[in-house]
Length: 299
Image 1 (cartoon, rainbow, N blue to C red):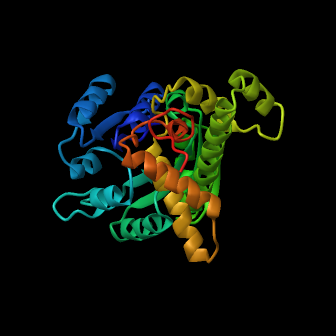
Image 2: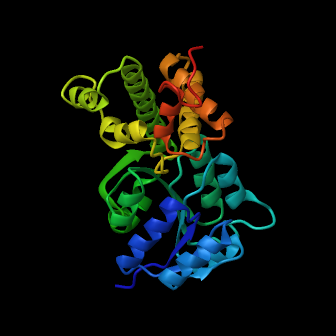
């Protein structure tokens, strides 16, 4: 069976490793594009793809195009920019959109793809860079069941757990809630460890106690040591934590409910951005809580 050709738009930390994973699985990677042309060229050299200078060339060269972009504005640009976009001559193509975006973006895009004779799915990702490279992502998929079934085998190469959530936009809703809760947990952990240090407690002991009690969480495993040692190499950036929590707050406003913990967490990550720390991992929220660090304050 001939495998479909694959293109990638947005080959940062996640997109780059997803492309390498599919290349390992023998899918032909034929086109890559990124505003960082050097990164796109590096990926092209490793996969045999063409590093495209425009978006419409990606659509022309690939049957299925993955997009992994930063935010709603970037998504609108790659699909709706009048001078150059992915929907130019897109008939018969399929777009798999993996960024955490506002749900309405995916709903609008599904309609735009339909009008262009194309198809789209949202495939919202949990986990991080190592899982992207290993093909062990958790994927939440939204769109039509027909399109999902048609490309399920491809998605299974990227995911150890694949969940079809429902219509376009629904996967983004679920992902926004996942990241909201994760970010709240991260900020809470930073406060617990920061207060523990301020009281002179042994933080190794404190982390061990947290792990055996109701204070346990996934972020305790992934972020606690980094908070203590101030190793904030980026797996999920603080600016993305702010963006995704903001999406959840917008959904809450639309639903008419208040989320005070999410609001406080959003403000913490916005403060990190204002301090020029938005590119650091979300664990950097500890810089606002540990005594003696630049962003910490008694106010």
